[in-house]
Length: 327
Image 1 (cartoon, rainbow, N blue to C red):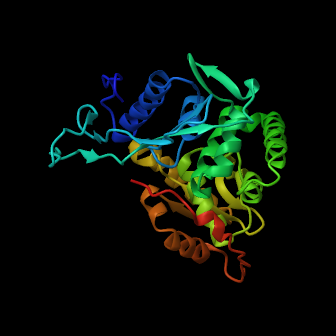
Image 2: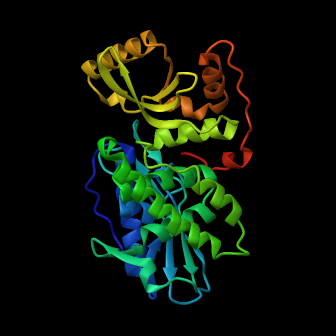
């Protein structure tokens, strides 16, 4: 933005560069606009410490007045090089081998009459909508696929799930859900309220990554019954926690998004784990990040991995398939 300059510091993967630029855009919007009182929606999720389905979201701010101009296109950025860089002012964009052109991001300005002083908190000097308010806004206005990933991550931030103290985690979970339910109920004639209430019931702090959340969304949208998350299993005197499972038919669905960053020993241990679970009677199917782009294939593989003689009664939740495009 005019008068706002970022000196990039992150030289890691493109996702880390996008996070740096997104946070910088949010702070720039706060500084550049008069009357801006808080960062909201997906940028607020990041500032709270949560995760998003897409790495480069639009930037939403709340103003103290009704804006005449509600959206502004922000400069596009090139990612993947040594440092992120702004697109040069020329017709052709020269890209290095590892670089990718970022999406066209919008700055969106909102005026909210119902925003109270309790709905705004300050994190590292930056005013953002509170965690409960951010979750409510995301459920109401984001596409369901994006809202599920953001919602799961906000629950993780709030509950700090501990497998050994699940009662404390679940108490915090229900406390936040009750708060958001009350907020949603107050929007009697608000578009998207019923969908938001349905989605709230599907969120869980026990989803450990955006990939797990997206995998669960694919299966729920296809009509699978609610899985149990982090189900505890003892196999050959070893204790394991399963990502997504249906214990009644001993079906385990695992997400291995982080394995490609792990060492050979981690991959080897995962193989031992899977063999032990199979010998204990569990049917195991695993997915990595690229599989999430082919949801029909994911559904077929889970159905094929189901025990013989088990008939699934799928009740599709087609409304969950609405999503923002990934880069």
